[in-house]
Image 1 (cartoon, rainbow, N blue to C red):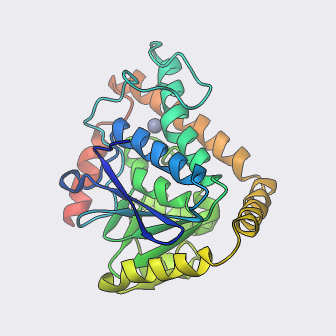
Image 2 (image 1 turned 135 degrees about the vertical axis):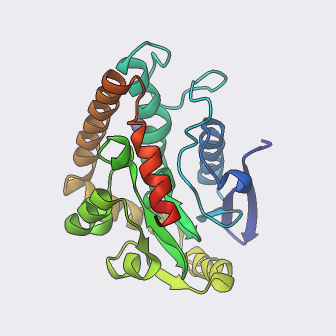
Length: 278
Ligand code: ZN
């Protein structure tokens, strides 16, 4: 398969790497990118020679989040989840689309029965945070930051809402309430990030870590991953994620009613202003 918005390679034995490749758009996630990402994850998951999957990004930042300016219709894409009715008017179609390519994809990628490693550099914002939150391990460069400023858009957070597990409830609330960024060091301190390394050592460190994992049998790795994911599921992670998604769609529906669009338009200015530091 030829990809337009991502690149794939095999940088080491048994290691597949998927790289977000829209650096001019700060790797913003168009619907095309999400479907290409899903296809690449599936290909790596089904390739018997691959034991570990690395997710990286081109350019100065890992990902600026969803591409809000792009076309978000489903035309031209074959659904992956059992959802349908994507073109239905109102909340019905919007929920179906977001259950498919946001929550549905994140859930699929989180449960790929092979270890995944996110290689985070620069800024990881909102929808970008979802991509790395569903990876098993996260390695960050020292200047990396993580944020979910989407409360400014009048929703509770991004569609895959594992924040209480990722950051702890109190830090998750601060992150959401303020829209602020966690530095790599802070993210490491709360256990969101496994390792923090200098930017020029990031790729090598990730490949070395992937190589150590790939020395182990695929079966043991699969069982270990499932055991940990199932422990989180038993704690209620999936139920909480589903409940948060329902709230997210109350937010979208409220915004549509109030402002005629699914996000509070004032949020764009708030986020831009804070990004400029004023
Ligand atoms: Zn949404």
